[in-house]
Structure formats: C-alpha cells, structure tokens
Image (tube, rainbow, N blue to C red; front, side):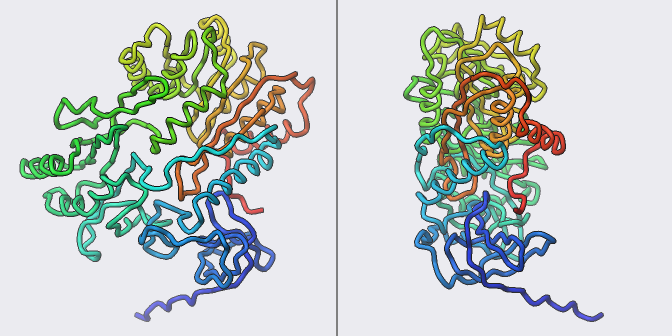
Length: 484
C-alpha cells in the first residue's frame, strides 16, 4: 500500500490588525478574515493555515518579523500555540495589563455589535492576582505509554489529548506542586486506566480537596495509597463513582471542610469541591463588594438575587438590606444556600426558592413581587446562557426595581439581554466594566448597572432586528466569533 503523502504546510505573511474574543490575532488575506493563534495587533507575522473556509481562515503563528511592544515572554514552559501546547491559557504572550484593556474592548464592542447598546460610563476594571489564582480545576488523567506513562493536566490546545505538564503557574502553588506526585500516585494504582479525572478545589484558607473520578472500585491497596498521598500533601481525599452528586469525602469529617470567606461582610460559605464557585477567590471577594455597592442597597430594601447558587451574593446582600430572596434552578443548591444562611445567622433575612429561570414569566415575577412586598433591587448572575427570559419580563413589566446589577461570564449573552431591556423596556445601561477573573485566558467576566427609563411606545428597528436574531438562534449561546 502506498504511503500517504504528508501535506506541505501553507504559510502566509500578514499585518495583524486586532484581537478577537478568544485572544487570537485578526488579519486579512486574499479578501478573507484570518484568525491567528499567537499573533498580536501591530505585528508582521507569518502563519500556517490550519483551516480554509469560504469566508475565513484559521491559523497559528510560525514567525513574528515585527513584534508588538506588548508581547512578553510566557512564564510557563507548557504555553504555546503549536501541537502539544497546554490549553489552560491563551494569552501568556500578552502583557497582563494589556490583557485587561483587550477584555474591556471586547465588552464594549460586543455590547454594540450584538446589542446596539453603549454603557453611559465605564467602571474601572477589577484586578486580582495574575498568577497562582486558580482555586478550582478539572485535571484530565490518561495513561499514555508513548509519552512515558500517566499524564495529569489540562487538555492540549484544540485537542482531546492531555498536555504533558510538570508545572503550572495559574493553579495555586500547593496544587501545582502536586502535579508530578499525582502522576506518580496514579501510575501506582491498579485502576489507573479507570480514573479519567481529578477535580481540585482549594478553600479560602488553603484547605485542599482532590476528587478522584472512578470508573472502577479501587482496591484496598489503592485506597491506602490515596490516603497516604492526602496525608503527605495536606489534601482531603474524595471519591466520585458516578455523577457530581455521588462525590463524597473518604473521611466524613472532611465533608464540610472547604469554605469561601467574604470578610467584608463577615460571611463564610461552605462548599463541596464539585460545587460551582468562582475559581479566583481574591477577585470574587472584590467583585461581590463592588456589586453590592453598585446596587446601592440600603437597610430597608428588598432584594432579589437570580441564579443565586450557594448564596455568593445573597448572603452578603442580606447583611446590608431588610430582606433578600435567592432564586436558583437546583433544589439541592437551594437547600445548601438555606444551610449557608443558617450557618451565618441570616435565616430571618433570607428566603430561597427553586425555580427554572430559563422559563421565567410575568406571572412568576408578579408572584415574587407580592411575596417580597415589592422589590427594590435585583442582582442577576447567570451561566453562559444568560438570562433572556428574565430580561424579557423586566422589559415588559410595570413592576420595576429601581436598579439591576447584571454579572456576566459571557459578554455575548449580556449584550443580547441588555438589548432586550434597553430597546424593548427603556432600561438605561448606566455603567459597565470587566473583572479579570481568568488572567491569561480569553474569558471575559463583566458587570453592568441598569436603571429603568420610559418604555418605548413602539418597538424600534433595533429591537425588531434583535428579536429576529434571537428567534433564528434560539435561546442558546450567542456566537461570538462569526467572521466579519
């Protein structure tokens, strides 16, 4: 059989114009947009074409002939843009404060291009630590004989393979120091090929939990090795035989050991390592404080916190207001949030409800308004899908809070929801800004402050166009990287 001939790489040299929402350089070649991994604005760079579509190309940088003044040497040896590079970071080659400026531009551009809205003012960016900030991570485990045995780490860029990591500068230092020992630990287990993942969670006081995802019951010797590893490295050992709800600490006393402290409000939130909590604890504490201040909460106010989770915002808000209700889709999380309120002595000032917020309607809002005897302030902190149903209700109702603060992990759905509120409900986007929750990645965490204004008498052309776009796309994530 004839040996398959390797394809000769196609390389082209271009002027890089800007960055896209994923931190890739954007250029033009033969009338098409080109997205180039590893290229920065203002650079003259050569890229290898990886994908060639009708209206755009994808590539990765192979040489930089004129460097940007903002280019910097990556701290991590696993960082890069070629085969085998770690996918945990996308922008270590860009000076950290320039990353923040880039994310602020992404927010402003996305609000305008998707929502046709502009904030009246910009909130100064929130910074946190640039390194060793990541308190939560899911590390993939693979036994790869061709690479010398067990690998533990993030996936390679645009690949299902595991990066060959021996160090990491975004994980907390104690977890990064465990990477090599974890590889040795798993290599010595009888079930090393039946352990696909290790989830890591670090509490506010540095307490660390390791959750081993199991597809087979560990032997007695395996358990002895796992527990010895925990003792040596100061980590609680958890096992997860099925879904996230099956995760449990081997030692029952460790079940409630992890906690997140919000010292400004005197609140501590206990969490399990499989719970959703913000990965960057230092920035989360700053974010919560800013959100509460932006809401302008006063002692007599009634507040609603949508997508409340464990009460990251609900419990601090309860220390500053008369009453807060947290609404969340998961019965389990609602029960845990109630326990958190009890642990912090806030039961009398809080209420929690389990409700699907993606099907929220005016009748739900009216019932909530009646239950709370009016709502003065609203905080919204949805997942990437955004809060379209809630935005439509707030745009249509006559029962309007005086202010809304919307915390977003996806500028595209924030723009969509702000567009509905503004063009259909007359809400003003008073201010918006970004929070650098995930340094060295393209992830943009943002916050917006909205206040009600006169509702338009008839739907504007922008509102009609946005509604058509939403109908065409459904309520799924808005695409952020369509070539232009």
